[in-house]
Length: 103
Image (cartoon, rainbow, N blue to C red):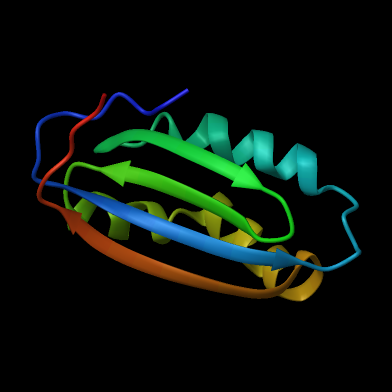
């Protein structure tokens, strides 16, 4: 299912990751973060896929909304757990979406 985004411009946060073998608590935290992010002002939607490399793209109204989410205390705890236990490597990119179209 694709995120229901508005007409551009809006922003995309692209989180690309490679997981470690350690995965205790990962699923529960992922579900918790999904519920929490959906309550954040400026959040527009999310799309995610995981194989060897995981890619999650969240969509946001503006950069201020992204900054607020990055500073959320529960999200900060999840970030720390990800760095210490779940991810071998990750990269975050923030992009301004200027055009989108579909079939």
